[in-house]
Amino acid sequence: MSQPKPETAAEVIIDLGKKLGIDPVMDADLTWIVEEYINAPLPDEWSVVKAPNGEIHYINSRTRDNVLDNPIEPRYKKLVDIIKGARRNKAPVDELTLMELMDPIERAADVKEMVEYMGLDIDKEMHLCWIAKLAVIESLPEGWEETQAPDGRVLYLNQEKGYSTEEHPLDEYFRDLLSRERGKKEPYYSTQAIWFQENGVVRFRNDEAVDGTVLRTETVPATGTYVDMFDLYGNRYWYDLRTERVTFDVEELREEPAAVTIQRVFRGHRYRAELYAEHFAAKKIATLWRTKKFQKVLRDLQALREKGARTMQGLWRMRVARIANSKKVYKRLGEIGQRRGRKTSKTAGLQETGYSFGLVRHNVLLIQRTARKWILRKIIKEMRSAKPYPLDFYIVRRAVRVMQRNWRAYVLKKGGGGGQGALAAFLSAQRMNNTDRRSSFFG
Image (spheres, one colour):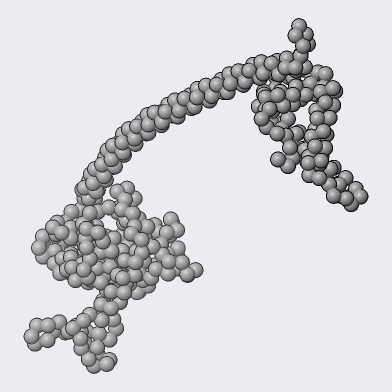
């Protein structure tokens, strides 16, 4: 019986790639995953045994399991599925997820210790705990080696420069990264299932895109104090940074944030209901107050209207009474100086006009004042133009009186009725009632 021909290295890579789901033609750029898979160490409890027939067996020393498939094969299959799924959806791949699948964190407590070392607050900064995971996964830079001092202290030796330090070479880098991420806007914590999927959240170690825009994780799953990890077999689990509890059930994680969200929504609803009730009460009080103020304004306006009406009525009654009294005065003035038995009245026209006595008296006085000024100017003009001889003061005064008497006679003669008759009657009444007063321009 002929022995099977040994496979070449290329054929081995192609066969293993097919087992991992890598097409040698369409996915030729993913052959590095096969190389990583070949060189990846087995978990401590697993060993490789070659059977007499040439088959490779994997034996678990703890559970005594004997299998033909590599126990870490599911982990690399998941790595391939994540990369190919991201390509189909034209979405970026989370670098931290790839690094964790290739080099899983064997001790979850290391992440908790790193979180405490970085000073992260798990109640407010859970979206930054991925930096602690990255710090645990990240290996030492090239040229550095971790050693232990005789007193038990951990030292980091730089082989090229020949010096050692107690501070990790990447501490400064992660401090800058943490400071930069803290300066960004906090992402939204969601309870939707899509954000709990593998590669559902993309973290950016380099947050600057090619076009210069700043990249930021906008949404993260609401996991409380749990952080997601992958074990050596590619199984995803959740580790509680507070209680160190481990669970593989993602629904269990979503229950607590969902309950918190429901409580928050209910509290918001109750607060809005109370706020609406207060707003409605305040609005009603304001409406009642405005109604009361409006009613007061209406009452004030009504009072002002009534006061104005009373004032107008009083003024009108005063005007009517004044006109009636003025007509009586005009009638009596018209009868002065008449013969007995004569029925005519010199003030009949004035009585029909409806003018008040005060207005007529004011206009008459104005006419008198104007007439006196005109007569005075005329006399002065004549005196200045006369031949120069001494004039006696009394002669001048007598001449003025004669002119006044002639003027009144002229007015009485021409004022048979209407306004002129009223004027004549008023002048006559004034002369008769003021006998003690001397009408003179100089006295």
